[in-house]
Length: 247
Ligand SMILES: C[S@@+](CC[C@H](N)C(=O)[O-])C[C@H]1O[C@@H](n2cnc3c(N)ncnc32)[C@H](O)[C@@H]1O
Ligand SMILES: O=C(O)C(=O)C[C@]1(C(=O)O)C=C[C@@H](O)C=C1
Picture 1 (spheres, protein in one colour):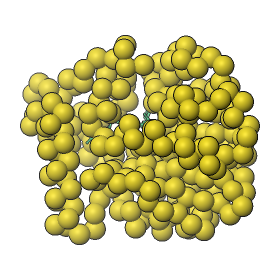
Picture 2 (cartoon, helix red, strand yellow):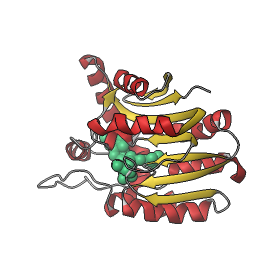
Picture 3 (cartoon, helix red, strand yellow):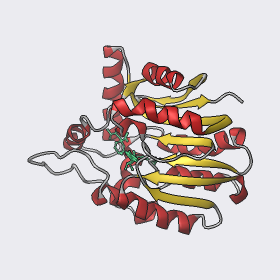
Picture 4 (cartoon, helix red, strand yellow):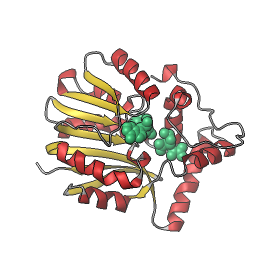
């Protein structure tokens, strides 16, 4: 997938006006490089999805990859589980993402039953599923729409089903939060991003990516119906949670 990807240089030159970040063709063209250089632990999280599925997924159960972008989470599952282990629906609202994800998944894992659909995950009709993946997607929904989606996903999960939720997070302690964000910017610099790129992207993401605290995530998952959730991964201000439906 990354073979056809360009290096992310979107925010490398000064922009008169930094537009709101959007998942358009320009982002699609460099997305694998952008997300790998911008999300600490991204590869490790993808690597765990197959192991989580192997432990929690009933053979042949349905999986959703919501806000799939180029299908990296679906691809990770297909790389780790045989074709008869699951069926999967990957969904994204960006036509440019969906087009590329379709091509990639058809080429890379033709044996697996994976469909890619263009749609809004807030209004989709969900079928009974064993695993739902929200890998850095919920953070892009308006905060007021998040609980309703999780409530619908809880209802769609089969007994024993699990939801994996990866997010950029904020720390409620101002000093701790500042430390994490500063080290995150160091992480970006170490990955080749300039001060200009870091600051212009930050502006572009304002009010587009609205992060919650881990506490807010766990409380919201509980209100949505999940009796238990835990944070299984954290790297600076990026985390992944798993929420369980009772068996
Ligand atoms: C950071 S990317 C997700 C990365 C991807 N899950 C991965 O693991 O590589 C967020 C994605 O969510 C999608 N998205 C945002 N709002 C959405 C919505 N309401 N319905 C469906 N997809 C949405 C965006 O188009 C974008 O592709
Ligand atoms: O670059 C940042 O500051 C990010 O928050 C990274 C992040 C994300 O968390 O989704 C933001 C937008 C792109 O989708 C890729 C990664």
